[in-house]
Amino acid sequence: MLRLSCCILLTIALAACSSSTPPAAKSPAKTRSQTIAKTVRITHIDHATASSELMLQSMSLIGTPYRFGGSNRSTGFDCSGMVQFVYRETLNVSLPRTAHDMAAAGKVINKNQLQVGDLVFFNTNGKKFSHVGLYIGENRFIHAPSRKSSIKINYLSDKYYASRFTGARTFFVK
Image 1 (tube, helix red, strand yellow):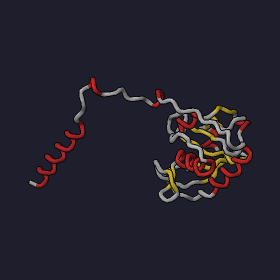
Image 2 (cartoon, helix red, strand yellow):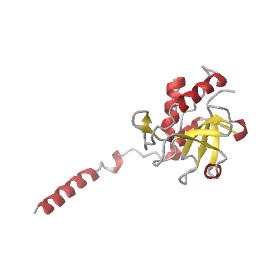
Image 3 (spheres, rainbow, N blue to C red):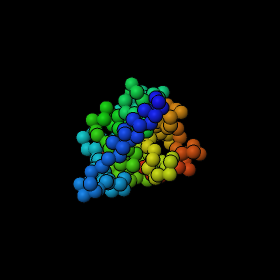
């Protein structure tokens, strides 16, 4: 009897969740490709000054646990949450939340133009800009790699990341 009651309650709850407004009242859903990220350009501080501050702030996060959707020290970070946090806390600059939107908001640069504080992007799950890290110089970047890890430093030349590198972006006016 208890099992039957649970099934009935579950059915009612699911039916309530699936109710919808008539199609004419729905607004069209935006797909990721339709989302237009606002361009971000940093002009209030020069790149050289900002880069050392960005690196110091990001280095202070090494060892912080990965958490999907995370964006603070106490609960952990995912890759874009870490980058967003570092830029906000260091430069008072608001970046988009996702790696995809960060890539869209930044200025495309070549790998050989990377400077400390620029962003590096990777395809780690079948999407061109699914992972982001903060370039810290000497072919290294800091990032929140995965659920099984914590914030750490890797080389762009590491086999895994070299084969998945999809581009670099800057927010600094040059």
